[in-house]
Each structure stands twice: as structure tokens, then as C-alpha cells.
Length: 248
Image (cartoon, rainbow, N blue to C red; front, top):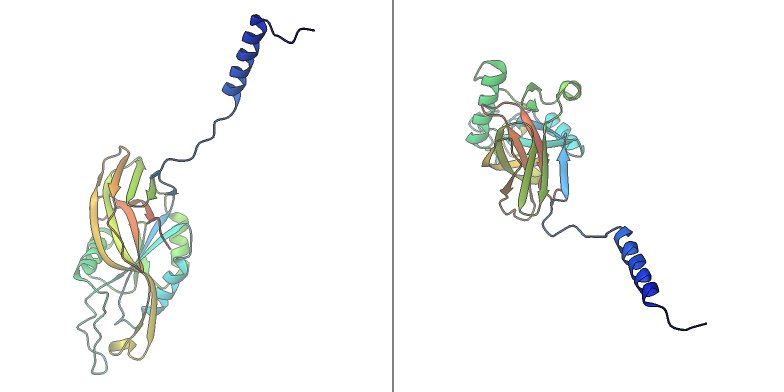
């Protein structure tokens, strides 16, 4: 038998090898910077609270538990109108309070209740439902009634991608992941208060117009995280929410 193949046999083998390579499944790694942490369907739960309010610790405890729920994004907004109130001869300046957070609460109450009057603890779910923030049953019922968010938010270090149907403002909220505060005045004097996802500040990143878009994220400091959400103008419905990629 000859040890040499004919030219036609060599060509046939080459064709078979080429077809085998084409049929083999390609293996590829995701490119650097591709969003890896995605979230669609997460609801945003907001709590308006104050360390000067004796009714607020149960609500903060509830929200600390809710912070572990993978289907929720939670934010504690500490309002400032309790800071000047005296109780038993003393008052307490909440270190996390801000007039901007109070303004957000008043805007919500105008939109949802038709009044600028406010109270604590107040919970807002999805930008559409409001109720006393310590009532776990009301939270459960509101979640059951809430429409699924329409936008998909995808994050990677330093960037947020938004896609889906809807239009709204894109917000970044800097969060203190957790805190413990020894209160030395006011209604909660002598108590140690704990919380999760305490708002430190909010920044508008831009607007989402219904076309897939990307937004640069500010740099976080040690111990911080962030919440990201898209909200219809006028303190309307929350269209989508997630955390920064490093959370928690």
C-alpha cells in the first residue's frame, strides 16, 4: 500500500477539518466593562424617619430586615424637622438629617395625599403607595399591588446602563451601608439606634428618554454604597431601581 496520499485525498481531508472547526461551539469571555449585575423588577422602598422620633425605631428595624430582600432596594431618608423639637428639656440633632430629604417627603405628600403636611415614620413604595413605615402588613400589601418596574438597570464598576419602556429622571443616592448611633437627647435619649442604607446625599445623573443609555457613577468612599433609580417627573412612579455593583 502506498504511504503517500493523492492530491484529491489531501483536499478532502482539509475540507473535513475546516467543517469540524466551523461546527465547534465558540468559547468567549465577556469583555471588560460589560455590566454583570443586572436588576429588573426590583421595587424601591423609601422610609422617611428621624432619630428624634420615638415612633421611628420600629420602622428602621423593619427596613433593616427589608434591606436583605433581593427583590427590594431600600433607602432611609432622615428628615430635619425633628431636630429643633425639645422633649424632656433636650433635643437631638440627627446627624443624617437634611432639608433636601424633607423637601422630597413634602413633594411626595403633595403628589400622593394632596397636602404638604408630613409625618414620621412614613414609607413610600414604588413612588405610588404611602403608609406608616412600621407596618409590615401594609408593606406586604403594597408590594402585592405594585406594578412591576418597566426598566432594566444594569451596573458595572463606574457605570449604569438603563433600557426598557418609560421616561424619567435617573438618580444616584449615596448610602451609608449601616450605622449605630447613641442618642443623647430628645425622645430617644439613652437609646442606641441602628439602621441600614441611610441616605447621605442624592444626585441627578440625567434623564432617560426611552432609548437605552449609559450613565457614569460617582466614586464611593469606604463604608458607602449607593442606590440607583429612575423616577417619573413630579415624584411619580419608580420605573426601576438597583444598588451599585459593590453592594453590600
